[in-house]
Image 1 (cartoon, rainbow, N blue to C red):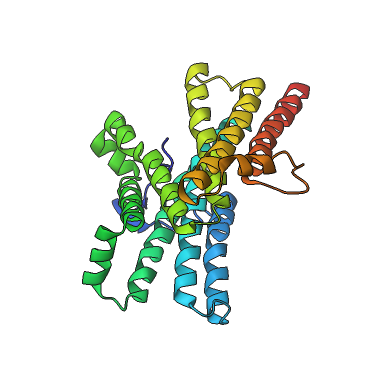
Image 2: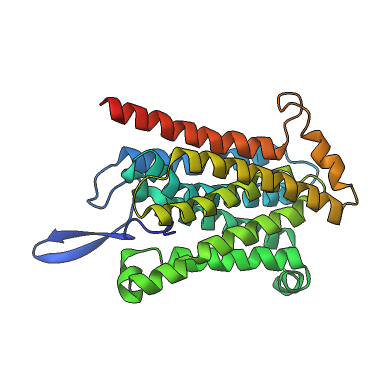
Length: 300
């Protein structure tokens, strides 16, 4: 739930009896020391932006380079948002509590990418703010995307320890449930942008179902690890619902019979990889990783 929490935006150092705030540096921990986990995470989060900027500079995004970069930054914003949502399950399944310290960095980076996404759209419209505002209000997919940006902005602004103290943990937790709504809106925006080929939004739908389902299971276990059988069943259910959702989308919005989409799933996945197979592979892969970790822990 609390994907944007983790560390304060300032580190405090004591000099000559005075408390002096120092700017937060992403590769340092709370004590101001270099953290390999922070440093590696920070570099990995920069990689998509560096690749996009490099390919843009080399002229690979023709004939509409700005439009292509808009799509790619938006896509990576959603991907990074999903990574932030996955921190809690990974931490619990693999017993890696240290992952919590980079959760805020990942969540704030998702907001940064979607903010760049909006700025590039404004650039594509020649910084005509009146037109940009009108387009957002008139076009549903833009309005949905903009609402997701607002929610992510609220989450980023309230992600510090100081915000937790001001709001109080119960109210702060309520505010940060906007994460799930932002993820739903981001996926809906992605569907509308993709139009014909919705493979990746379908994968994201299945993964979002799994992420939300995992949190429901974790509540029932009350701090104990979620069982491997429920995890495996959740992966299967998420994949099935993703496949049914894909069929329903094509039936409703493209005129392609949903039955034809489902028929493709009869073909073995190594011959024709469909989105629901990807969801199943990712979720069952996570279950296998949890199984391997528990076996190793038992042997130790």
